[in-house]
Image (cartoon, rainbow, N blue to C red; front, side):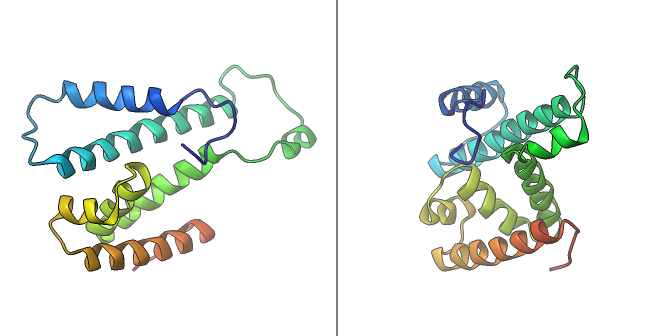
Amino acid sequence: MRSERVGHTLQATALVNEAFLRLVEVQQVQWQNRAHFFAMAARVMRRILVDAARARGYQKRGGGAPVLSLDEALMVPAEPAEDLVALDDALTALAAIDARKSQVVEMRFFGGLSIEEVAEALHVSIDTVKRDWKMAKLWLLRELESGAPHDA
C-alpha cells in the first residue's frame, strides 16, 4: 500500500477487511499453521490489489471519463496501478517457471511476511528463501524493465 498514489480509494484497513472477508468465505481450507494463513492472506491481498488496479486502468481507458487530448494525457504521470498490473503479470510468468520464487515474492511483497515466516510457510530453509527472494527480484526487475517475457 506504500507505493499507491495519494488519495487512492483502497486504504490498508479496507484491504485487510476485504481479505479477511474473502478468507472467511473459504470453508474447505484446513489451516496448517499461522504461516499458512498469512501465505493465503498474501495471495488474497494480491488479487484484491491487482483487481483494483485493473479496474482503475479500465476507468483510465474510457470507462465514462471525459476524453483528453494527447497533450493533456502526456502531462498525467503513470500511476502505480499500472506497475502493479505489470508486476502481477510478471509474477504469473515467474510462477510458470519457478512457482516457489513467485510464492516468496507474493508473501514478502503482498503479505509483508518476514523471511523466517516465508520459510516456515513453504517448509524450506531461511537461506533458500533468501536466495529465492534475491533471484526473483532480479528476474522481475529484468522482466519489468523489458516489458517482454524472458526465460529463467
